Length: 283
Image (cartoon, rainbow, N blue to C red; front, top):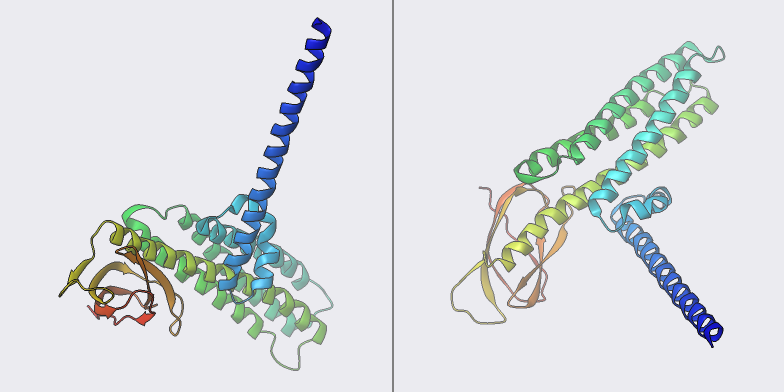
């Protein structure tokens, strides 16, 4: 009888352990799939989405579903690639097979990459400071530095223009610099996307905190809203618009925020569920 009880107890214990392991494994698989899908969907905002997915998908478990960690990882990957290319070009510039013109272009490019590395390092450092009232200052610095890094990379390839350059050397250098430039472009897009989410999230929180006030008669579905934002960008470039949502009276209202740095959005008449362009006040 005792042996039968022990056998039954052992069987049930094993069954419970097996079930626990199975559940844990399924959760892990689901989490991994969610993280990977987040990377893929986030990469759609970049100019080179395939490169974005290829370079960041292996870091999905670290990124999880955080836009900030996504941008941070993109910067680190870009920095690592720029470092490796810089080391390679320093070695290549000392080759006796290169013409003086090629050596000069190579050294100029190494100098530009040095500036790129410095700007990327400063950007990565500032990413850790994106908290509190200094958020806008740090974010502006990051966007400026990454943009400057992209300019430096493009300047590097300019030095290899001309028919007097060895074709193989030109192609070799350009291919590697192009990869760095594309990684930098993607990182900048992810940074700008994170910045827009931050600002727009503030607007959503503002709506929930009832900081938005209505003017005129309260008649749905049309209302006149005055929305005031912090002085921060919401979007990327000069001709693009990023969408954000405000929930007012439990209805989703889609708005388009200007990519320019603005102080406030003027009063507008909107209809729930209708996309409208918001007029931006200059002051």
